Image (cartoon, rainbow, N blue to C red; front, side, top):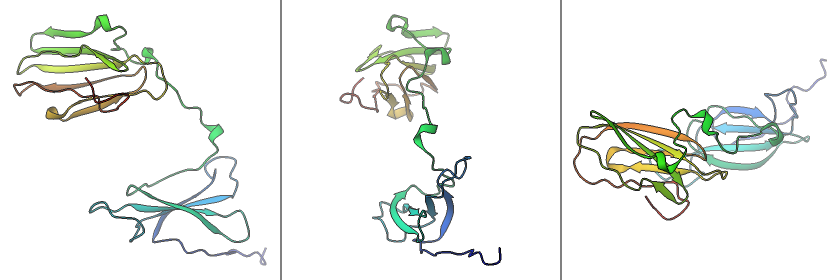
Amino acid sequence: DTSAQYVVDRLDVHYQPGHINATQSETMFADGKYLAVGCKFSKDRFLPVGPLHAENEQLVDISGEKMILVHEHPVRPEPHDFIMFKRDLVSPKKVYSHDEFPHAVLDAKDTGVFREGNKVTVKITSLAPTFAPREFTIQRGDEVTIILTNLDRIEDLGHGFAIPDYDINFIVNPQETASVSFVADKPGVFWCYCTHFCHALHM
């Protein structure tokens, strides 16, 4: 159709767009309602909080005859891809299943320190707001593996585990098990913290 208008409207976006995507464009049900624009720089749009500035994402209504900028917000640098889709396409898992984790510790009575020579496994459970065991002792030079199982069954009730002096910090979501290994090469007493608070900083 030689009479078709290939360019029907123009809209200035903020600065140097790197990626665009329309609503549901990666599904069979593209609807032509909104266009997201990933701008590479924010250039004084948002308050800088350090040497690396936020980038700027803009949402454009493309459903009518004229495009309308309806929203923008800062994001961490270099989000290289994004999609927009209706929420009914997603049915996320609410909690994990212990069956997914072969090393899950299913009962607080199974926790503790288990030694084979200098290889030590520390099995811990968390059930808000407590951890078991609350403390453990190992020897300098031990190769330590900590296995932590979250026994909570409530959605979004995650527990953190951190030993700052060993640069350890991870989270277990409800019914999830995670582990970390390190060499205990420093003598002393080291605090372990829950960094994902359901209660005051504890452990």
